[in-house]
Image (tube, rainbow, N blue to C red; front, side, top):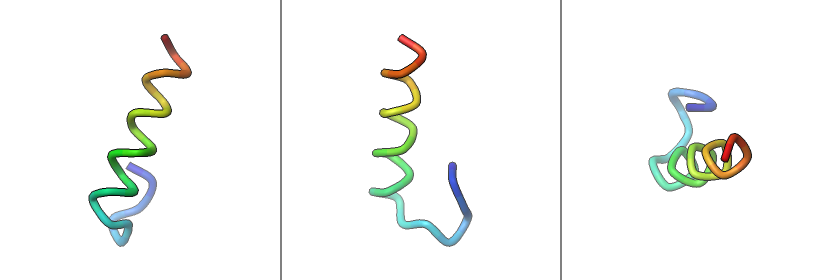
Length: 23
């Protein structure tokens, strides 16, 4: 994730975006 302080929702959004970008 982005940072350990980031909320789970933000983490999910970031990860999903990253996956979509790689896809």
